[in-house]
Image 1: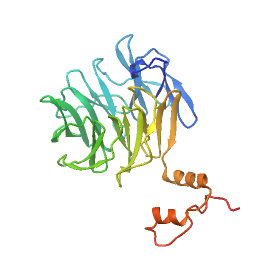
Image 2 (image 1 turned 90 degrees about the vertical axis):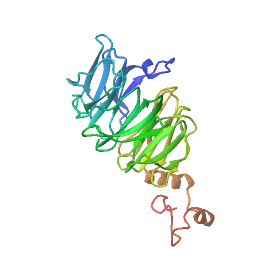
Image 3 (image 1 turned 30 degrees about the vertical axis):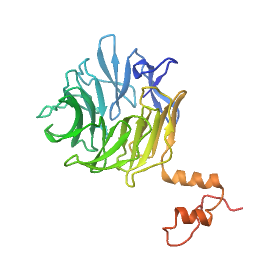
Image 4 (image 1 turned 135 degrees about the vertical axis):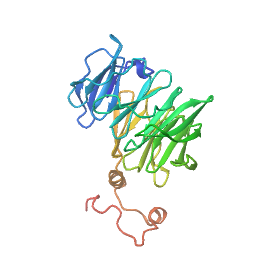
Amino acid sequence: VVAERPADAVYDTDMSAFSIWDPVRDEATFVIDEAVWGAGWFGDDLVTAFQPADSSFRFLRASTGEPVAGGPVPPTSERSWPSPSGARSYMAMEGGAVAVFDGQTGIPIPLPNALEGERVRWISANQDDSMIAITRLRDGVFQTGIFDGATGALIVDGLVGPGTTAFGDGELFAAENNRITRHDLGTLALTGALPGARGEVNGLEVDAAGATLLATANDETVTLYDVGSGRRLGDPIPADVPLIRQGFLRPDGEAFIVNVADGVQLWDARAQSHYEAACRLAGRELTDEEWQTYLSWLPDRQPACAGVLRAP
């Protein structure tokens, strides 16, 4: 979902003229033609937009633009978070309640236990929606608890401080200020950390395989991490969107987008593509010094750019 950005826009509520955009073909598949205050992904092939004329949420099929009944969604709802699978959307309501919706139909999903809430700050879910992490205000501080996705029952609680979370493969990533930490799902105990961002982290996303993490920060940067090694992949990428989400990771982890002043940049995150680009940029094989520095752990010296560089 993209929006026309007025020159004086600062917040996402300043956006207008929303469209569903195909980043590969670089064209709109359809334009949301009614006046809305905002539009965004609600789930798999489902977007929602708030219509101020009647204070209601409208659901649309992303692939066709056709209306979907969905809802009802109270106009006092504060924010929604689609799950990584797109099967669900989690919504924070006025007063702290948390509601669950089907990500394809927009219809509410009742749970046996009401999900706890009190000034909810962030909601995330794992890949199959069996666990939900909710960060909410409790006793004057933000705490994150993990809830059962089928029943809504609390599993573990007490992670104090971080306000942004994302599930990895068997772990929870959490961000507080510019620090990104790793936590055990059973206890929420600290297990490690990633190199911090330069600014306060305002978003975390992990791909479906749990291999790549994307962090966005209020210093207008997007940073990619290799989850296995905990290393930052390259330098933080500059964005140009004050107080608006700086970028998003594609679920398969092979691409991501960065919001910039004059549009949206599409980045290729595949390791093979970067390897081939490095070979073409250098135009040569590694020197002996480079081989010893970067690939000495391999048993035998071999061509690093074979098949990429053309023979003279």
